[in-house]
Image (cartoon, rainbow, N blue to C red; front, side, top):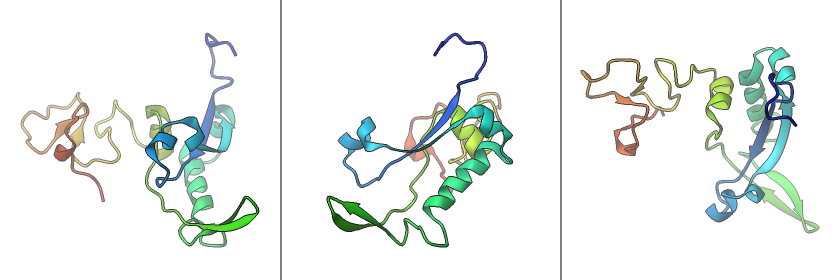
Length: 148
């Protein structure tokens, strides 16, 4: 496609999944990420709830209360043998735009740019008077107060 195209006519949201138990050298390569679905942004914009509803439906697919549930286990066939795979949800990985739209947060320009931390504030706020808050560029993990 034309990378200089003026509109986002071919913009796609790609959803992949992986297993935390895979070795890091596998997860850090494309072979460690399994395609789940792809949806054009134009279609996604027409869905009720847009990207956040789409993300919730994907999680419901993997962790349904009906039949298919990764927490209780799923039977898979590997080399003509049945294996039982269990998994739990560990997190979401994405670029800023995808996380912002999927999680329904304001993003880096908002007052609370990090959906995972309680004490990260925007650069636009005056946080110098408060010891509890850190800026978005904080790289010291021990200074972060994570949501549970």
